[in-house]
Image 1 (spheres, rainbow, N blue to C red):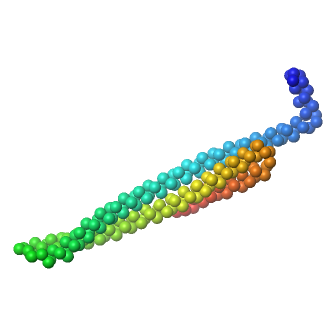
Image 2: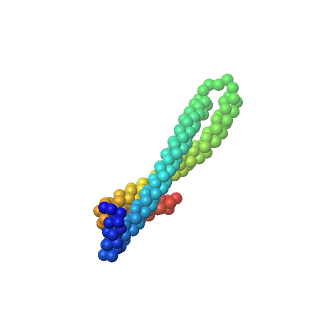
Length: 188
């Protein structure tokens, strides 16, 4: 086609009204492409938030494990000292006053460790509660991410099929994904 023929063809299209309909379809597809791009950015943002929530859960679980390990070590020492306190008076001794001093010192240590053990147990359970909250947030971010990814795919199908029903279904799933991800911020 020669350049002047193309100009004539475009002129005929304008006169027949087909060019206006084509321009309207192209404008609609441009808006759909922009919406797909926005959905893709939202997918990326929700993915990052989900990864952070998973990381937080792992860190809190690690802290809980550390505190439980500390609790276990202190509990072993507590139990060993308790056995010593129980057996020491039964031992024959040349210096009963020394045994009495040691028993009072050991009992004081047991009293201190009892408080320490309660505190460690409380701290570990607190970290475990944080793990549950972080996992709940991560689940909601993951759900939102999945729905947003499906929305991107459905909206993209619109570009291939030119059927707007896919686009509207994609937008509905995208909105559901955003709501699911946003609900993660309500968990405290």
